[in-house]
Amino acid sequence: LAQGADIHTERDCEQQQKQLRRRKTRRTTSSQLHPPNLHNMMPMEKECLTYTGAVVNAEYYMVVFASLILVGGIIGMVKAGSKASLIASTTIFLIIIGLVYVAAEINCVVGSIALFILSCILAPMFKGKWDKTALPPPSMQAPLASESKGKKKFMPFGLLTVMSLAAIFLSACMVYYALQCQVQ
Image (cartoon, rainbow, N blue to C red; front, side):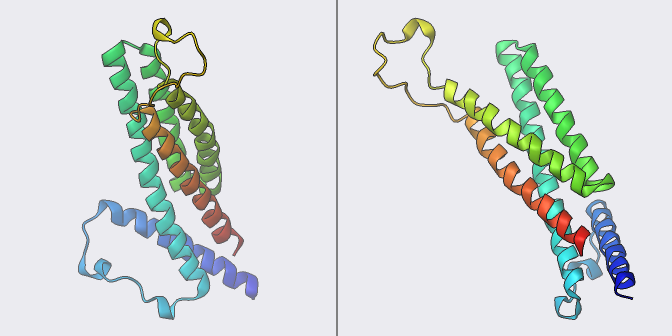
């Protein structure tokens, strides 16, 4: 009997997730303006509601993050004529959008774990590029190594580094909630 109850609450969780995703594209009605009564919900239902809200917000963040990476690649192409920048940013953009789709529609655990791994790869890459912005051009480097490197430029790689760290945190939360909702 307890297993049947777990299956029933998992179905409820899945239905709540689907309803929330549908609401993103529809107009808000008066019944949707009022939040559900949390006092009458079972613990599993509260977990699913928290999980769904956290995942949807993290998905929005990941789309914004991917879009900024793409915009950076376009700017790199326009300013410096770097086709490699455009190709790399477009590839990362498509991978992130694909993983967000997997997390949203196919398998939240797999998509969330893949987003976490990708974010863990991107953060040190952007950090390394951000560190290079402090180096003066090779022709202007001082012969003494003890001199300071200079100030780092925050845009664009500083911003992408910070956003990658936030993406690591959010995707880790997505993994946690996905596993919690799946276990219960």
